[in-house]
Image 1 (cartoon, rainbow, N blue to C red):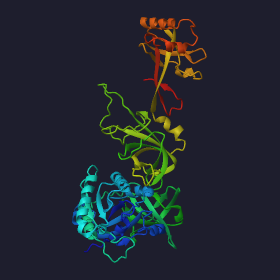
Image 2: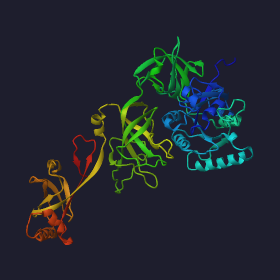
Image 3: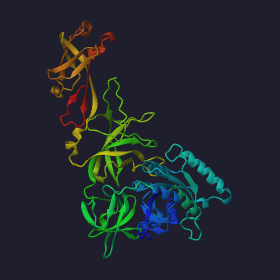
Length: 574
């Protein structure tokens, strides 16, 4: 009996990234036979200016290649659908590119063969390195090269691109030359695109069976929303995780509303369900499409809305600026970009039996974090010659963001000059802990043990007996000295003691030396007080400074740490 089950199509998402005006949209148009609702610059502004302002989606389908039939296992597919995600090349729209890059299986980096690598090409390459493991480089606009020198120019650019990619995860990737729109956008559609058939063959050869898991909660990246009269509102997007069926209830977390799924379509064909990796249109009723242009849809209650977060951090090596605590960056998290203030910290490692303080192999994972650990505040991200030490950061968002747990985080300086030849992507990491309470500074941050080292230095003014000295210049007159009572201090002559309390009204302190002062210390202090000569206590500080080197004042050193988020602001000594 013949199998009556409907043909199944495997969806494979290909990101089309590159510098503005490198011909990405022309390439997607040349490749695609079936266009989705969001394809090919629906935005009238894009049409006028000839550049893509939004993520565009289009697709074409081919018979399932032989090598994929083997890797599909029990899941029988008849065809392979390439969904092209056309990401905008314009530098100011990098937040859209980052959103698009998170839903792709393979990236096509489009390079103008005449101009080569440009600033935004490099930024797209960096985003690809963070979000994707497979890439093809397309050298476009070969029709602009003189016919007699064309092959030599293509060979030269191919060689240059291989060299550029040598130290990236895309070393040795395939490079192919095409002319997606001979003559440019203004030219009539008469000339056939060149190299497209070869590119389709290359895409088929490079396609792999992507990780697809229908289990877990639904997360769908939404890129477009519109209404159909008499039917409802259609939300289109890509399913990032989980699955979706007709009659399911889904949440639009940004608006705190839930809606029932009336129908599901994949490239205009109705389907009963869809899963991770699929590109779908989902019809819901009683929802105003103007309320949602880009965002996420999920299983009700599955996403967090965060006011702050802890992330692992790695600096992007091409970013030239320093990463300073208290600075503000554009943070792309999930599918939102929001300003946040950042504070960096690293771990204070406990010593083992050998006296070493290196982390265990399990603890070395930058994506591990525990509130039980002790951390140290950093004024800026530490960069070392060979591999940075493990570092984390606290992000405090200017407005709450909705995102899945453990998602990718990218920090950028999108306010930098877009025409400047500088990388605006600053760091990346993974979201490890999120704070959903608006009052997180009182409820959650006190659990975070980040300390700052503090040092104070003063001088011994005089000895009162063998076990007690009076110190000055360690504190200001208005300091509450009670906070420091009991803290240990060290004299420059080697004795250790503790602060017993204040002495008089001018911020002086009484220090108890339990082991007693050394004989030479007493002599040193008595000789320096004698050298003051007449005038005794008058102008003490200036007189002390005038004494000879052998009568330098005995200094007092106080070292302690304070936990930044401790509401009691206690001083701690190890």
